[in-house]
Image (spheres, rainbow, N blue to C red):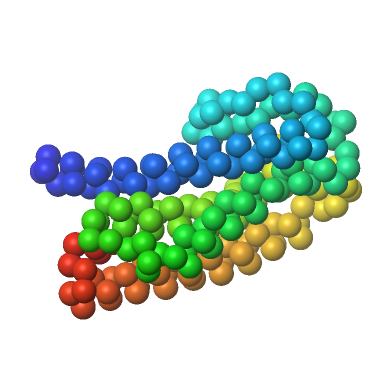
Amino acid sequence: MLEDLKRRLYLFIPAIVAVLLHNAIHESVHYLAARLWGEDVLEFRFLTNGWGTSQVIYATPVAERVGPQWLAIAWSPAVVTVLIGYAIYLNWRRWWSHRRWANLLLWYGGLVFLCLDPLYFGILSLVVGGTDVDAVAAVGWSPWPVRLVALAILAGNARLMVRWWKEARARSERGGQPEAQL
């Protein structure tokens, strides 16, 4: 029983690594975008807000954030992370190896980078207040079109991940890479 538990926990380590990497990149892009637009940053909080996520604290109060630069600051991390996800997806066959852990890291990386921000923009932003989606207020837009686009992207990216999962399973069953299964 203990061995089975260890084996199962071992499989989650790549998922945790992928989530932490995504979080660090996402928040770093917030920081860089703010600095590029000349916005002062008071703090960079990594994994401190109770949800296991991070925050960049800007000097400009939310009520004073107006203009399209706030869309760039708020949305560029999602664009960057999803593009990284597409790069992972497009190259996974080249990077696939005989090491199960490496393949899991690759797959979880693809899943997290392709799906986490669209999930956040499309669904979680309804529950969590003060999200990146709310930056539309800086230009007077409604958040609903943004949420709908995010849901469409999430649906498409989820299909890519299912396709990847099936192809990886079929590849391992063919015997080409016996230890490289998901």
